[in-house]
Length: 270
Image (cartoon, rainbow, N blue to C red):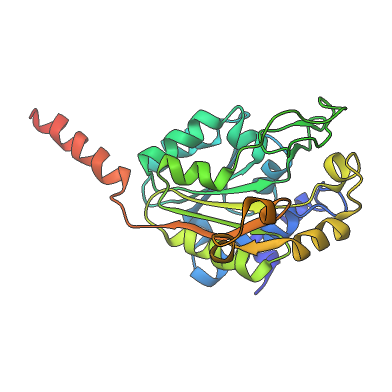
């Protein structure tokens, strides 16, 4: 495929740091779109604020760069206004589950036809290296110089509990699986979530002495466990491991169908 066909080349070079995994995710999205044969004009890519949210600036789709944590709110309005659009939201762990946490939960509950791809690097990378809801306990951040005292969110389990119809997790090291999960999510009716663990060597890795991007991806390679295998492992054995795979894949009525029924009733005066 020709990646350049999907990119705004005048926006290059990108601003992501050496070793950041966000470019790997961007290429995965483009491969999936190309494989599906979607027209660029039929796609809307929406983001909030953060490193991940630079993604729409680089792609030649309909793009919307919104306020911090509000990407899903904008995307919901966009999908309702133009249901024919393929609406994709890209968001970071802080953008999605901190300031945008309520939007995330209720988008899953509503089951609106949006695919959300969450770039989880355990940190607020762009805005100063602060603790995010997914920063592991005891890890350091600019706002936790002596270690994070909080337990982290499990994004995929949160999406599952809130009602998303498709939930999967991958790492940027496992590119084949990432492509498969994103491709499945894009075709799913309802709210689909793909959480992707991506290294941040600048704001997270350096502070926690985890090495460069290659070192952090090597950790992903050596410490990832498939979800089926993980079911038979103890909590002690899973400590420090990354559990990946498909957490949810179910069929459920789309929110748009119910929303249109309400409109018809209102128009008929029933």
